[in-house]
Length: 397
Image 1 (cartoon, rainbow, N blue to C red):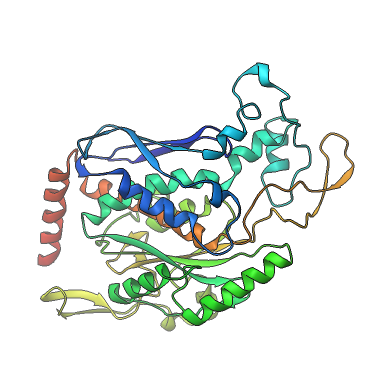
Image 2 (cartoon, rainbow, N blue to C red; image 1 turned 45 degrees about the horizontal axis):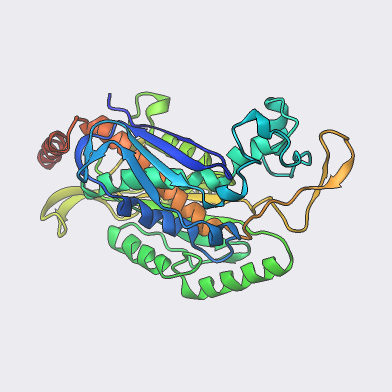
């Protein structure tokens, strides 16, 4: 079974973020520009903090690509942290620099601080917060951009849009077709909060501005979609091969994500069965020029029985408000055990638009792995042959 594996490493104020993705076949075009586009999208969005004015992320490909084509060997990427020059001693790897900056001993509610310090027996919470920081997601976006580029060669597009920030909700559509999703994505890309609803976008900006003045933060929700996904990715045969389960795990792994749903998800709890099933039809398709199985609705979000069903994949997620607050919450010093106001690390007021871009990356990585499991080969040409053969078979079913 063809497997995509990827790893990230690096600390928020360390020298660089690094990533390796293994299992990418040979013969696919790839350039730094393909990656940098999504890195810029991740850094945007109204409500981002001071870090975004320091960093201007660029990815360097250091292996796995020659003359613009993937080699089939592991691809390694580096994103330098421009703020590193201010942390040379504080984040040094050398024992001689121990104590160059004071330890962090006040855990922040809502972060990995206290649990991580207890688990890893650390008396300096910086050992935990540097790695648990959402800065790590920059490399996930870079690796996800590699996956998106390859999926695009097979007609699969991954995108996202914001549906809620704080109390402000966008007008909700239930898109069941590629054209509607493309329109929503294009509208979102022109919004500073990545919301396709112009009226809601303006209200979201005002809501974020108000939260800034109140020294608090806002969460929200977003939808990730994938169009052009063929029938049959994933499997019903084992729990860990189910596509929806794999996607849910991937998106839940993003910092501050606290809920994931596929299709209509949680809304199904209050609806009768006839209102949430996607009836199946068979007939002529203007798009494909032949008779096919099709659905008029997409309540299932493109996945049934753990497998893609040919409809667009729709996943929604909830991001909690960022727990680092300018108006600190109460906590307890891990050394003195006395109550203090939690330490403040530079942070965002709202990062929901950025989280949606990270979710695109994680979705693309999972879909690419499932795609290569189904059509796997060592080169682009081989995978193309396998995919064409399968699509030809579907025409005869």
